[in-house]
Image: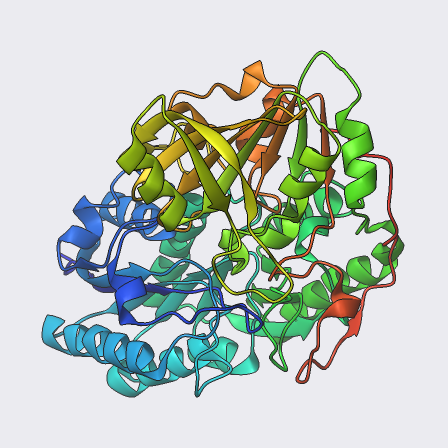
Length: 504
């Protein structure tokens, strides 16, 4: 009888915005935010069970395959500036020590992001994978899952036998991507050799243009399915443009029974990227255009994405450019969120529901050029910030928002309701509003501080969707980013302003 294979599993996730405001220290990895707090041992499985997370998908598929899973450590921190050396070294040592303590193992699975930059290591995941190899050696298969926005390096590829990458943005297939590592691990444990080919795409793509439901990515991401019929595994990453790193940008990985087959597949993917470059649409509306469009009346709400203030990309989630423009334009029936503003949330809780209070909303992060919106607000509702996701992307999980308040602007021609929170979260699920009593379908305009993830839950109720170019810490116009380390050119695309975008 064949012995049960033991697989050590762990996760360490961070998406680093090198131009962000605050760093990710150990506390940020220990606390709960849009994802769970730091998990230890058996918690890694019990506290992520049923969630759309890579490690949950791997654990479920591994159990079905008959593996014995040895959970060690899992943690993540909301995207921000660099991971501190203290946090990186502490978490790495915990993770590696627990792999050592597990004892004899047959394989390792890691739930990583792929765009971590620390104070000392531009390639955080490459360094982590190198250290894992030092512990387990090259005879033990090491597989890992990565975010679609991973900036994949040669060191990451060299130190992992297989890297599985999300294929959707919004990321609806996170658990599926973790699970995809299991059959590959089975093949490796059976003695099969998989040859690798790694090829970068020669240009950078801003995140708001990476929606996989739109062209050209709706076509490009058909290739992995076609290659599977040829017994080739193809993985495509689109890169995270706020990480100033020599390997920042899209890339393709291919695995096959021969080096020639793998290389040919990677070459085909990159060729398709190059041939479809002109199809990329990086357009954003100006604030003036946004206000004008928001005056138009339609059967369903217009959803406005404040793409450059996305907490999920290291934004501060407290810029006020869009809010100020909508107030000045006298815009009616607007819902906005999420503003990271612990001070305003605390004042609202102190005043109580129904109170009218003067607040200075937003711009508390000291981001240059931003000022709070000073106005009188009615406190519509208060909450403890425990928000159970209802949308497809994070459904089954719970967001931790801290003290939360729903506020209504008063004393202005504009009619605007907004949600302020005490813990920074990307606004990507309708539950961020409904958990505190606000129904997005009752508004003509919904403004979300998100780049693309919001589409999964808001697109079904949207009459129109547009991206707005309001100043923030996550720049989507790549020409404005003061890069010092990138080696690839910017995509040659349609980057002007447009009237609006559809919901498809």
